[in-house]
Image (cartoon, rainbow, N blue to C red; front, side):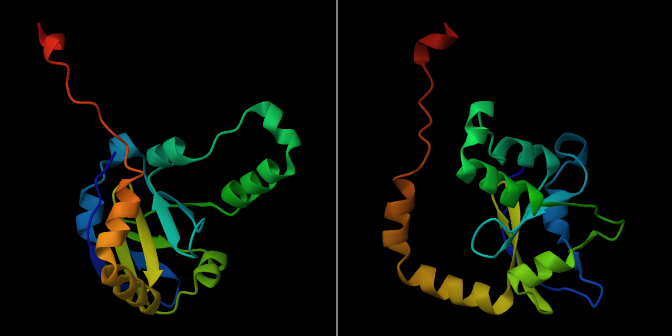
Length: 161
């Protein structure tokens, strides 16, 4: 799974194509992760781009018996029905479908952000406002977020003997 980081200021062209920054493309091994991306705007009206392999691990799965619950059915319709498979051309560009451009409120200027296991694409004005707001309370944000951190147990010293 890639460890994607950084922010990159880019533009969406007149044909709704976005060039994925080379640094992010280079961090993804297509033989391991799959080719192209799965795109969705599941939270915050931001475009999420997952490699096919990563999408398989983060996509919600439900027991067959939960299909009787209308919330489960509706959530699956929104998550899977509004997701799109995107191909990347030789120039590193992906075509963003018009419904995702509209849903995310993209104009020409966007920010492409590496966020650990996925890429996010934000309208530039929305990203700038988000960063200003979040960095103002960075310490409190860190405390709240780290309370949800996955704890990795330390290695067992007896395991190697």
